[in-house]
Length: 65
Image (cartoon, rainbow, N blue to C red; front, side):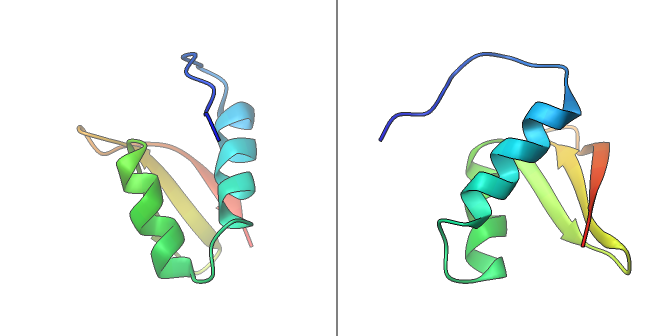
């Protein structure tokens, strides 16, 4: 399977991508590990998941649980 390689400034598109990838894995840890490979750091918070773009680790949005 190939991924779409276009750049986006829309957090909505990033959120959709992250959630589609979450459906493909068995655990939250595996999902977070895979997302680091795509350049996103996903951290669990009290309200859901905080998403940061690597390598600068700048927060770009949150995904509510």
